[in-house]
Length: 165
View 1 (cartoon, rainbow, N blue to C red):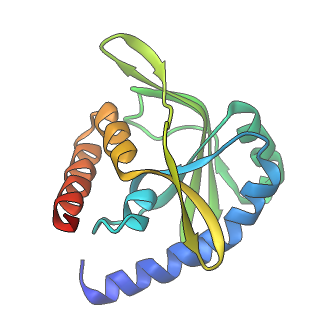
View 2: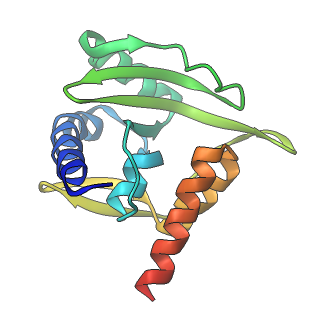
View 3: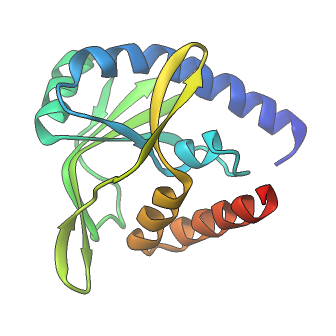
């Protein structure tokens, strides 16, 4: 990522989180967590952030669909998501979409199982607390997804951990 892209990503991610996080804290009755490229980027990985993925309960996903109705783009997961099922919704925010996955499950060798995050850390973004998985949890979750892009992110996070030692 070049310097211009890094600055643009920082501005856009912070702006969208500034809009979305207060609503997430207000509307969600259950714990929620930012996962995917947004969480990896906040942890310091050099990744492209195409959207912000938020893991919620199914009931909180329903609440957000109602609350963000004017921003709703789709409730259909994108093609290639056969390994996943959830109460999905994609919302349009200026510069970056927010994808909510309520009760996300992934299909693996043992069948369908819930995606859980055992350890979260709060990341301060413009004075807002954003829950993300710990780096170790991000790696575990990304590896469980098994897609090439997720395995690439997991590798970048592992390298980041090694560099910090």
